[in-house]
Length: 560
Image 1 (cartoon, rainbow, N blue to C red):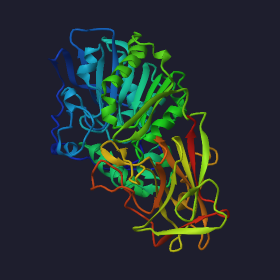
Image 2 (image 1 turned 60 degrees about the vertical axis):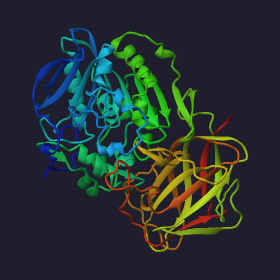
Image 3 (image 1 turned 180 degrees about the vertical axis):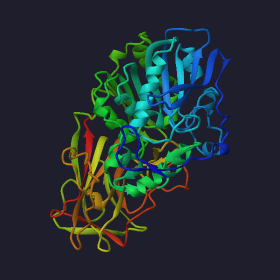
Image 4 (image 1 turned 135 degrees about the vertical axis):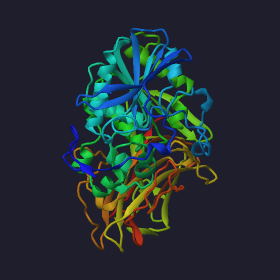
């Protein structure tokens, strides 16, 4: 099934599929009603008309007895506003989530603010089901201008209610964060502030493809399944991804023009969500035009950070100032940037204030790949090669630090590369930290895992063309607009973006560059982690090193 009648969307034909059956869930069905529970007035399934007449459904939680001048926090998502906290399900029980899930009230849907907590602090809280899912009318499209317009219309409807103070803030984690980018970019007059807590902002580069390599588990599997419960039609993201392997008009129509965002923003990112939210959150902070914006970057698990007491107080202070209009903490004196410099999974890290992101005082250094698996201060005088089998081999290059060193920011790998048995190749890169004994030091990874690395990067060699208007030495940006097969019999220069991180290396510890032709970590299908199982690799991969073909890692060293 297909349609191209999507307001503000690409002219590319969008293919749809029937949504997942609501009967397969505990969905209670539409039932517009009001209850009073735990000092909250809860109104479920309120119909809200959009500008085209389509009716969406929202739930509103308000402090009982408060009938006017309420600031509002709204969250927008496809997962189901009715859902209760899912942490007790078998899927999540197998993981250490890093926080006491019992602290959340039963009203807290997945990745939403806890309405009981926020109502107790004088806020109305709104959960919205986006167009086409659960009880909301229409067909569901994802990451589109239609979503932005619907969010815009809902904010304006809320601001006009008799109980509202006329100001609305957007909040929520992950999917509930990335919706904030494009709703805010539509500039609803009564949107007062946003708090995107770790959210994708470039759906091609950060979610469905990594370095041009298709992501085959989370975006088109776990996420798409959970976002597609509907009695109607939903955008068939797996089919569209297969039909649009390049960054074309279809992908350009998705997401937000970040520069159009002007409202105050408290942006949260993590070093631990490579391949999902790390890049998008940091790019969002860099690009939005807001005069009042703050960035917090942690190295832990997103939900533990979202619901941590100190971070709830930060969120409260932020929304108190911009949505409630009551300044309980001097938010204007917040440092513009707070980052966590990581030591390890076990020891955590140290938070530090900064004046900007990226850090201006960074000193970039080249670590040159050597022929014997080492990283050198200068390129090897003789050209040589290092090779591995793309199916099960790898290449490693190490540098043991002689003094304590902090690496914070984006890295870039310049690689002279050859694939003798193919005209294309998929490359997977991990930056690792080894302790003084040579054992890898693990970090938090992808919300639930504890076997992460310092940083990750990917590239399909045929996608190597750079967007010269956007690329910098430390952050290459690829166009992904056309395919460039590898020439036979000669090395080709590849620029690989290594996603941002912050890690402290002590004297005697080692930085390792790992390069191979497959995912560095693998997990069972439908685990909430990424995978890339649609490879173009064949035979051996050859890396050229030395003066004539100088392959090197550019690292951001922060002076002590």
